[in-house]
Image 1 (cartoon, rainbow, N blue to C red):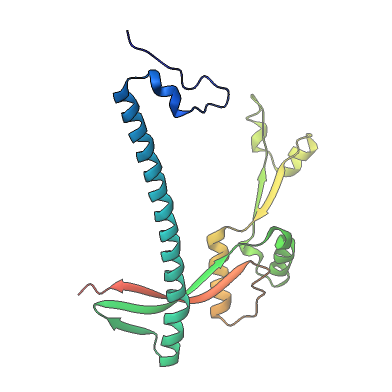
Image 2 (tube, rainbow, N blue to C red):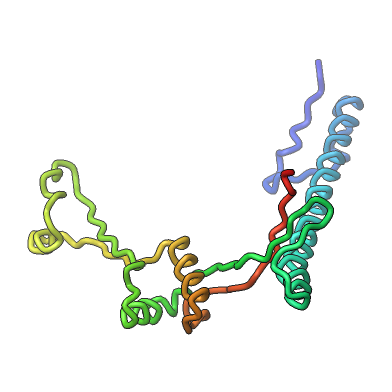
Length: 192
């Protein structure tokens, strides 16, 4: 008959290693080894994640700052190094801050650029109301339904819009659109 110990008997699900005295020595050693192995793996994962984070920061600093600055000083847009092709490319990211959304939409409308704004109307119908789903917004309001309306700009559309405005030399409030514009070094292996 084997001796069993319920190591999860306490409310907080923790236990002291001394409670394992009644467990076969081999199982105790195996469990201790697995706990140590798991702890070691968790530490390796944390270390690897920190290392990866540092590598990404180094990559960003070199590709967004150091290489473009040096290539600008040299007056070049492309260079071949050790079978690698390095080109300077525009980089744009944008996400309108929630507190500036209405301001950004108004600016787009005032400048005749509101074609990138999407206007979704969402209506929920219950079972058996399929025929009513095809009615126009006005008809829905007349019948007592309360459609949900949402205006937004797709993220890729916003990035393309910002890139286009910057490339055309147009003045635009980048903060209002949550935009960051830079040039980055793109490195590709020469396929020759």
